[in-house]
Length: 364
Image (cartoon, rainbow, N blue to C red; front, side, top):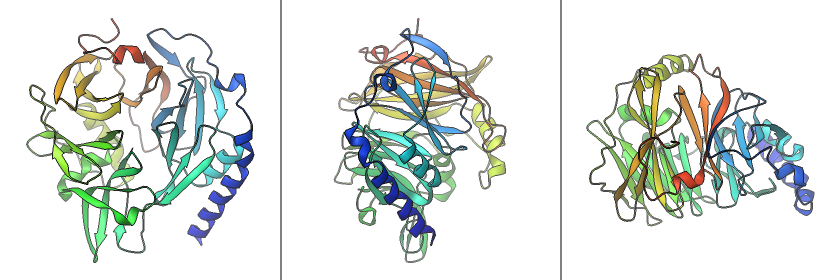
């Protein structure tokens, strides 16, 4: 019955949004409040509840933030002004399906919904495609903890059941056909905790996907094409770090002490594929809070193009690369599951990241 209701809600959303495709967006819906400097901390006029991800619209004028508490997709201008949620006809339907993660795929958006369902929205937020990735009642993909689009595929970190045997692995499969998944790299059970932190350890450039392996001895960057073969990407001169020791994460009550331990650790906090390069976000504790840095990598040549320090000491960050700005959502400490403040965003002009190399303080 639950699956039937989900399909019904999704169908109604698609039908309800059909008229939106004929309506051009109003000027006010795509305009920003003001010209943001090259680096600026922007206060949000509406504070989200619990945020894991955000994404820019294709034109870079609006930042879309998924609030997991209200189950809404919030829209903000580059000046931080709240412009409401995405259109009610689709927004109300999506609220019933509990959106949690949003990512760009070209000019489209992909949303992760409850129970392992994914949906593709076009620039007008009209649903164009959907896929039921998780198949709890049969062998196959049992969960999705991390994911990224890679061309017309998805690359995920999931647990898999085959013949009543469970294991963890990075997978790749066509968006429309998750049953045809290929295993890229299996992960031992004791190593899975790092992939459940919510850090985006998977990204892509076109159809080539990249993911981080957090091993006992080292952290390595892997690359995979549509053929499904994963290879280590050699990066001479760049050390990605070593795995910190973190407490267990079994139930929701574990999240606050876990994230407090993360704040005291030096570790990668995400990778982002953007305009032909990979950007590695790293964190390390400092006397003033957290020292955040961004490292630029040329994955074709396998070269390290420098690192720069970000002008933020936030406890935690969620990052959204965009054509005009990169948004770094500055989050406070995790008090409990669903309890974390997010009052402002650091916006850095994308041209800063387009520099041939990064060094020093990014915003000096």
